[in-house]
Image 1 (spheres, rainbow, N blue to C red):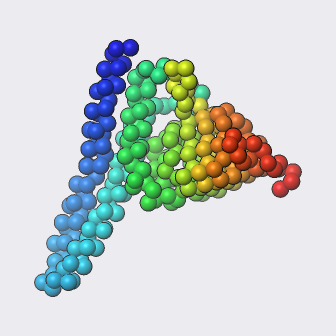
Image 2: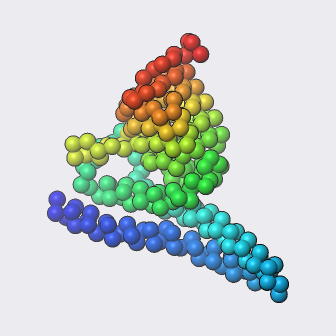
Image 3: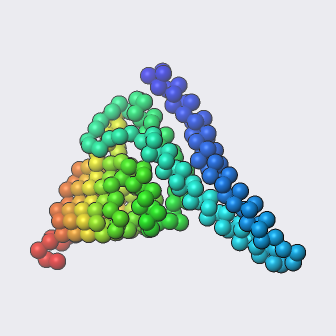
Length: 237
């Protein structure tokens, strides 16, 4: 108990260090790119030089964001916990510390990731972090909180600000449970999907709905509300 509290306290310092590393190191290649561009396109004309410099800055910002995404994905690939099934661990455990470490890396990445959703780059990022994502999926959210527990099928559309959460805390334990979203499913804007949820092929979850933990939504059904309930079955579509 005391040992874990010490680790948790030190973790607050580690969080700051993680932010420095995740945000800082990708700036190096961006800075080098900026220097190279400004040297190549240097001009004696004030306005022309200012234009080149401004474009070099914006281009360097894009380079920074791409490198940060790749760096963050690599870190999460190396350190994320390899859990693919329903698992319960003590909240005060080193598994929790490792999970929280990757969570902090992901949070540091979200300000950049929001500019790349939905896109193939976002899909690649989530795959590198452990998710099973089909290349045809459209993920317009930065809140796939437990990628290693998430499976997203073909032609799935996930609306903006949707939250897919593969973990919860119950009675002093950290519970992980996989989430599956079947082919052609539609997840509306602002939907909250809790751990252990299974969404069938072609199902629809309406905007702002909250799907409770371990709920199974059959193929083709439409669910809405808080908590989400069936409002239309597959036979009436």
